[in-house]
Image 1 (spheres, helix red, strand yellow):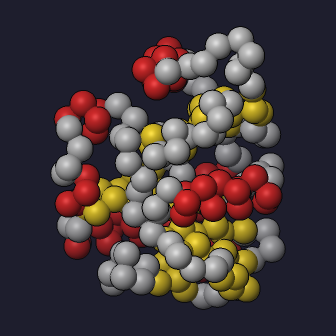
Image 2 (image 1 turned 90 degrees about the vertical axis):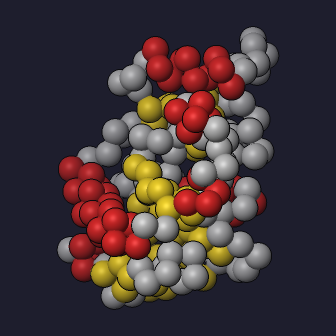
Length: 192
């Protein structure tokens, strides 16, 4: 269960529409694309990671339905970031006012917007270095808050726009701060 990066730059440059069609024509394969145009083929998660992902997502869904402040997205959603990368965080959230600024076509395809919040839950096959680089890419593209959860070693890295990365060892909860007002994630479902 490893991600593979494929560089086609010497052969062709894929437009946004071509990347979109590649993904639509291969629905059983999860693709991302980095800012230099390299394709990243993502493997499916294992059972433990998939279970933790859905449990975490459940807390976000409940909070979002209660507060109605924005739109929540799962790992199947691909966002076109301002730097040209196409990324699919495990969980993403966008403030309703920002989401409403997109056209219906932009909302239907790969939304050309950086989420306000992203979460990446490390799988055993994930590379810490590449996931940290992806988190920094989110922040560099104006994501306001990001959580990298490293379940195996029980720590969280918190990425905030304009601030240094904060690392917490075995926290029991995480606050959504001002980005996700009132949201608190109980980490018992992660550390399980």
